[in-house]
Amino acid sequence: MLGILWAIAGLNILGIRENARFTFFVFILAAFIILNLIVSGIVEFDSAALTRLKESGGNALRPLETGSWLHDYGNFISHIAFCILAYSGIESVIQTAGFVRSWREIHKAYLFLAVTVGIATPLVAGLVLCAPVNFSEHEGDLVTYYATQINGTFFGILVAGLASITLTMAVNTAFVASSELLERVAHRYGFHWLIVTNSRHSLYRIHLLNALFFSTIIIITSGSQKILADMYAIGLVASFCINMGSLLIYRYFVGTKEVIPYYTSRVGTLILWIILVSCFIFLAIDKPHGTALWAGITAFVLVAGALLAKKRAPEIVQIGQADNEMEMILYLAESSSSDIHIIFRRPREESLGEAKDNEVYVTFYTPRQGIPPKMAKNHFRFPMIRSGLYQRIMLVLRIVQYELPDRNVTIHFGWPLSSWLDRLAVGVMVFNLMTLPRKFPQFNFEIGYFGRSIEPKEK
Image 1 (tube, rainbow, N blue to C red):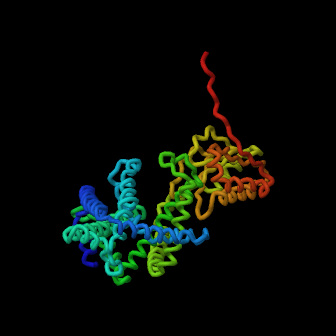
Image 2 (cartoon, rainbow, N blue to C red):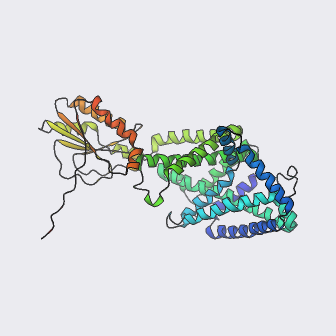
Image 3 (tube, rainbow, N blue to C red):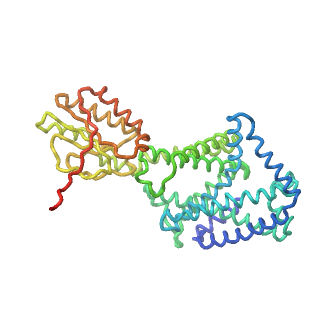
């Protein structure tokens, strides 16, 4: 295992990386062998195999008919969780992102993945499991033995060779994907020594670090394929849960305005997220060793990343460019008017118009997204650090309450113009805003919309 691992690392250091043409060639070869295996299996399918198929179908559905919705759902989740590794082909889809002009074109890769994972893989598994094979004796070479049975030894060697090439590509994919990830991290946090290339334009230092890290994992697990597979399955479903959860959170706060070309159903996303989280919980309980290894590595990376981000995160620069609440107070204090207006606005809204000395515009921004441009001298931008939007609004209002007690203060919020479905997503924020008048009874609160002026038509 270590020899294969370091051989792949050496090829990457020499600059011989997996490319689109080689990947396409392997996929064509795999399609040829798999289609031959499927066709041969269908030809060899007889009445005895049909009987075994019916029995297997009944055995598969029987655990889902316990009479209890909770037990049925638990059995359903366990069936999916045990097949979670079949969905690891998503890596091939993500890797094709570098070969397409936009994410609109990557649906072809997803279509290929759906055909292989959704049709070819279950079909091959069904044909193999219906064959007269002693599964206890061929647990480690089941498909290869089945291919030898139906098409001879040479075809079995082809299937075994395809499996070896595919696994080698998987190792290479890990090197390529990890090097791209670490390269982005190095650019983001200023570790330029890590992304120095050799004469073949290879990120050799990153490849060496990856090889050492992968070797450490193999040594810790003593090369146990079962523990490695368990750890990989846990990490895979965890990444799915994080991605689906992030999508839900994004839709909750932003809605659909910015994701219209990539619209997905809220209900469907929520159901899929619940299923994936259930699979993660089941695998975490059922695979304790893999879970412990995954959790240990994840905790180490998170702690190291958090310590690193405190000193070298680019958000520090964005926070340093922010305005100060006292600057806003001083601006309002210089106004001779007894009425002052504080207008909260979103980062992507249009220009402010003429600046007035008795009103200020306040924008809260996330440092990760960068500070928005200053639209006028009465426009103040405050970062959201370790607190939510509502808490930052409360902080600003408390400062105004303390520093300007003798002024007549009016707080303005924009009128929500999104669809009613998107408004439901921000219902919690609207509820919090409704509590502000009780907490600040001396302030005036307005939620309004100022229409655009219409130029008169020429007669």
